[in-house]
Length: 508
Image (cartoon, one colour):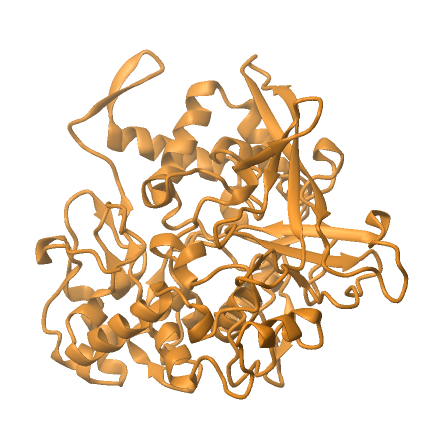
């Protein structure tokens, strides 16, 4: 879904011929020829777009838009990303979403069902969870307490299924609330989820008993924004390794580390995912695990050996061919790499806002918020500036994208793992689910670019891995462990300075 934006809204580049047609170091010089509109700042070099609409995440980068061949492939990948799979085109038998776009609306985060009420308990407690409309916009990870998977379920509980087939189970969520107070007296509240799985399709092992909830660890993930994914894949891995070696600030309790994972037979650092547990954008895994669509990397159905296979056969499904071609998967990968990154908005120089009894410009106000961001030491993990490799990125089948190379980018992340604590509301952000080297309490630093446009793109402000934070302030106040110092500095600011910091985040 490509926005119909006039060229004046695009990120303008002159002398584009060597940039768009060449594959050598000449393209690195064109960064100096960019015309940046007043009030904006580059976020992703030549992939920056100046779009503040609901399609801010879903616009092709200029190096795509200005080249016919690039644009054609991007458009095809965009269509595959958004088009709904059906039973006849590969969906199911069980699945979590029927297209990439069903969970990543406008390349963002579709509102998760964790905040959609489905029933209530006898005492009136609202119950939220798995929807009945084809997707719930969340992934439900299940495992034993010892880290092993449950027989007949695998790592993800698929709560949706095609007609005539039983889903693997349904998730229920009940929210627990606790009230807190900042030192200046302002009150705030945090919400902690409690998960229950019902309607399990199979019993536990060879017994007649259902899965013992005391043996179950359940972690829920809402979709990630697909902002800057191509730039992330082009990042200089050596720079990330250097950050890990340098990321030791004992005075603030901070020490980030890389998550090393093995994929496609390669052992290297992960960058993608909530716990940096993947080396690439996991397009094939998304088609397989999220939609039940077989492909060359995952040729077996996700419910292989389960009763849903026989049910599918009875409903007319056949399993003698792959549902998605390698070329189509790489085109989706191309689309994600080719998405532009919204420019940072610096604020108006004429619009006035109130700050500590005085009228100042919006731009000056955001500058104060940025200073508070650094005052709270947020930049020690949300690193402002990184660089991409000279040769850019490679797609699934080896296609090179040199346009992503040699760029200075501002993702506001170090892409490292950090202990986010277990102390807040008794559990903190520890989900007890391991991914690669990442422990349950460790999470990759979330890139912040584009975060302020999420409410416009997706009509909600749920943040963190499971959407428990209903706004950015709550997200900050869930920071424990290595984020404790920043949370405390933020807490001790006066209300106006806390709000200024939030407004700065919304400008990214």
